[in-house]
Image 1: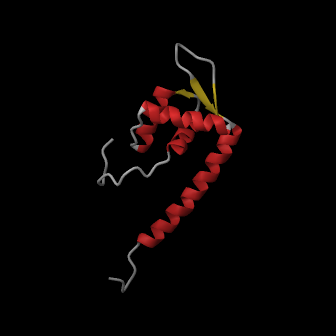
Image 2 (image 1 turned 30 degrees about the horizontal axis):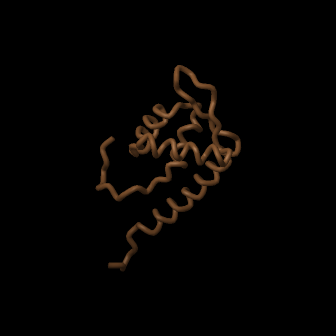
Image 3 (image 1 turned 60 degrees about the vertical axis):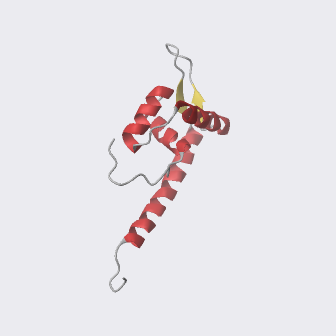
Length: 109
């Protein structure tokens, strides 16, 4: 995915990206990596993804499903959906504030 601006560094939280991906439906790791890159432009390394999966599972926000063809899919839990909703509400407030503050003000140089 082409970036419109120079890369400003990593402004994403991997756990948030995983929860957004799984909110669409159950996925195994490789499919999550593809999905996350498609919707966010963030290319995750497998080690980064699996570290986040471990932390999310420990919190009870995702759960592993039975292995299918040597791949383990994961599912978001109700607690994970709630945590995602709270995080997205926070991000909306941040976006609204940032959008207001970035607008040019009359008389400001």
